[in-house]
Image (cartoon, rainbow, N blue to C red; front, side):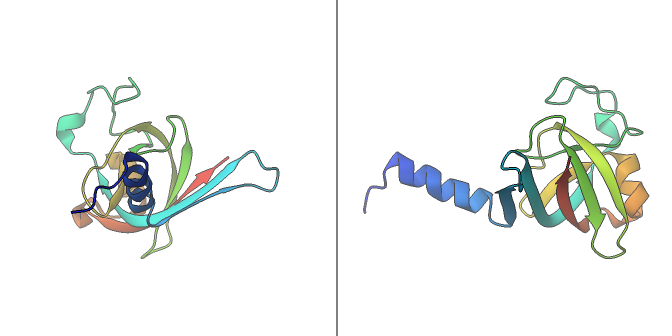
Length: 129
């Protein structure tokens, strides 16, 4: 078996993690344009009033979301690919940690672009400035 250096392992992990993403500087060279496509889910009721990774309390009625790597406070436009509806949410938590899922939305944010009974929807996300 061939030993792989730690640097190569980290590079491979990075490329796997960012598989369906686009991360590029804007025309001014400072802003980062980020888009990603995949599935969105929403927080279950058991998370109501619990602390998020940023320290904020989760509330169903706020337009917030969890993402694995975007900075806390990032505003993200989430578009339901099936119906074209979109919502802007603020990243204040980490997750989802389920293969194929790219964002967990608050219940009200999810409900504004899809029916809660859908459970999962296909979305495109874009950081907005």
